[in-house]
Image (tube, rainbow, N blue to C red; front, top):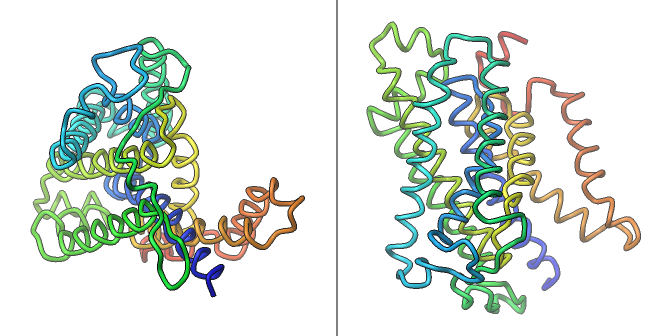
Length: 304
């Protein structure tokens, strides 16, 4: 029973991280049909923002001087501003171009952010200490669960509930849902395109900052490439869930996290190093059976 509980919490914690990443990507794809491959670099940027203005710091500079109720909103604001600026400066100029052009632009933007961090901080990972008490275990029905896992799961649930209420109960949420379903028709019906797109980018940037906080707290380091793996899995989750389906992306993020943990726990010891190969093999099988994704929106099903 204890081992099963540990696996469940590990799966929910890792799935929560992937779900947050997939949600950030799905929001942008929904309104712009853009897969923002710079999202992983947004995550890294938000983490390294905590080291500013020191370049050689081995620990938190301003973050260590701020209480969590100021640090968290500040980093969320940094993520939102960075994401909004990327839309205004880069992506807005490519709205009427081929989607492949916007995708290449996102690669270029990520390349610029990554090498800016490289120039400022070098490639050596930086030690970072955030709330070490979250690493302490708590006992639940005999299982010892790290507090950070519990916090990650709770944060994800709160984010999902708030976002669902926002999308279903507010005018801006209704406009965003309409734009995700059919952006051209939504604009003809009076939806303010710029406002919806900027809001989607702001939410996506805040989700990137939240992921960065979780990763930094868990690993204790700031690494330029720390967002790459989350970005890759999040992109896969959006495809598995059905491109354009926000609930599908979140569900697929949890499924991939659960699959990773289950494979890690059940594979023979010598085969565990190949866990990712088994996970991606399962992804291929799913796409062969459901190429449009598990939870594809109606518009995608009609195209298929």
